[in-house]
Image 1 (cartoon, chains in turn blue, yellow):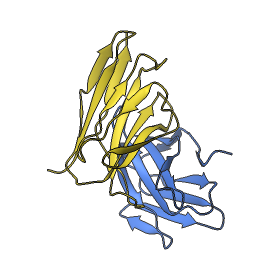
Image 2 (cartoon, one colour):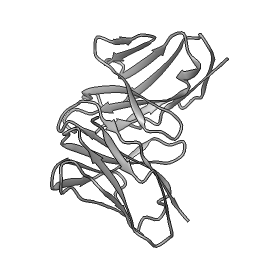
Image 3 (spheres, chains in turn red, green):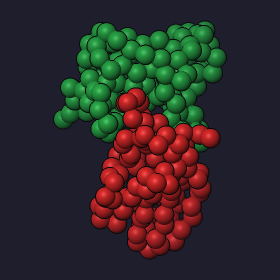
Image 4 (cartoon, rainbow over the protein chains, first blue to last red):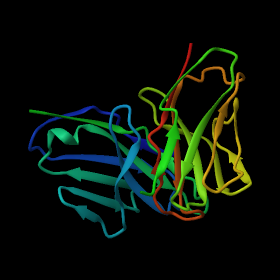
Length: 110
Length: 113
């Protein structure tokens, strides 16, 4: 089993839709969790951190489920500009070396 | 402005040549990382450094070398021993020995002709 797994998609949704991605991780001692956004041929940029209590930033909500070992990202009222690849990043406890998922592609169409 | 810079943005190399990719940061971060990304693939770790004058191999270090003589700089050399070097190379930094987020440079796209 890969350390961090994501559905590669693409998720093809209309503007205004709500879409959710999940990311599963295998190391139960993982300590930190992030969602990054990567546009085509660009560097990844931090979208949001994921806390045990959940995290909301405008239309974006991230949650952590330690029992089932997954994190999620919910995007409400999708915009055309949300089209990108969303990378899940997990850092196992004690290693300080982040592990990246392969990313989930989102395409928002008019 | 604080950030990470990488140069050049695009690099073309003939087979058999070594090339060095530059990565500089003024964020005062201790840890720096080099990743490789191939089309449709995730980021794979080449080398990382948690502190000046120290670095460790990542998952795909063969054919690459690095140095960390200054805190701000972490250059990556792609040697002729790297069999398939055409890829997008990303440098990142982070506050050392922490679980904080990484910050990425804009990347260098290397093409071997």
